[in-house]
Amino acid sequence: MSGPAQSGLAQYELQGGPDSAAPSADITSLYQEVIIDHARRPRNFRELQDADQRVEAVNPLCGDQLTLYIQLADGAITDIAFEGNGCAISQASASLMTMAMKGLQRDEALALFTRVHTMLTNESEGDAPPAEVGKLAVLSGVWEYPTRVKCATLAWQALRSALKDSALKDSAPEVKPPKTTDAGTRRSRQP
Image 1 (cartoon, rainbow, N blue to C red):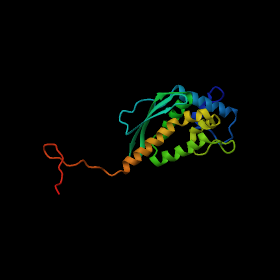
Image 2: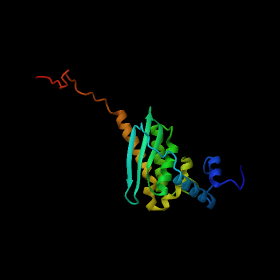
Image 3: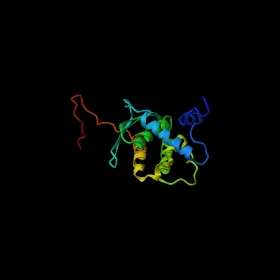
Image 4: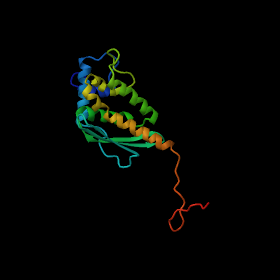
């Protein structure tokens, strides 16, 4: 299906996101439509039972609450999900983030975090959509609304925390428990 009968969201999905032209009223409207869609029908909204990392985050300014679940294997995000409630921006941002993160290596995910965080907190140069953020560019106008920046970054901050925690766990030396005797007591050396 193509032409005027096709919704802006369908065109966006088929085209793989925004093109490189300067954002127009049509693009801004399309971005809003995508955000509303993800807020109403968030993707990956579920508990992840076997998560390696679980991070709870709260935005006290507007009451957004989020629990982020990440499953990792060999440094890659194999599954990611979230639960919680909050405003449309918070829910849409978390939904879009989970879609973008699946399959990324930890360092790739942290690099994307940095690009998105910059996009969410700084005015973009020129009118072009931010580079190298793909469909996440729909969140690019958030920086204009300072009270909404925390809403949009809540899930992203939880992600960064979870990935940094997992990196620390991966690099920590294995701690072996002290040896015990058959009676279950610790053995100690006598001087």
